[in-house]
Length: 127
Image (cartoon, rainbow, N blue to C red; front, side):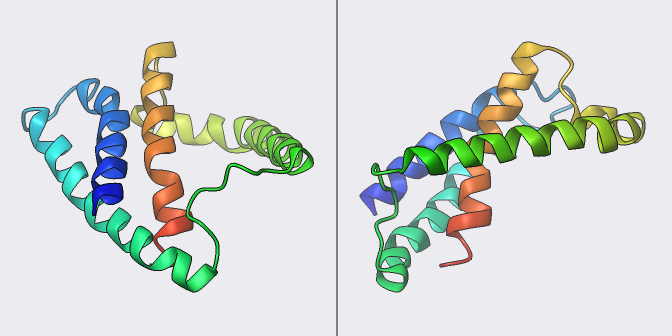
């Protein structure tokens, strides 16, 4: 429970810049942050409760092979360039609100993605 609370608090803290940059926010910033913390707590609790039991691996591992990091970095750069050249011109016209307008908005989008992409795409399916 303590690990889930800490992870949920970090997820909520990383999402705060994105919430603060939300222009037409219908509620005060504390409300979406409280919802993000609450939902994140439930998801992280499932992760910490079941991940190690079913995968026989720790949730976080600090022993990462350098070649694996390099391969993931190269694959990420190639995928980002393909998305930038193939999809972004069309999608930017249809959904301009999904694209950051400056560097601080880009940082906010990136922190939000780092806080939740791992949880939703990697950890939650195990739970």
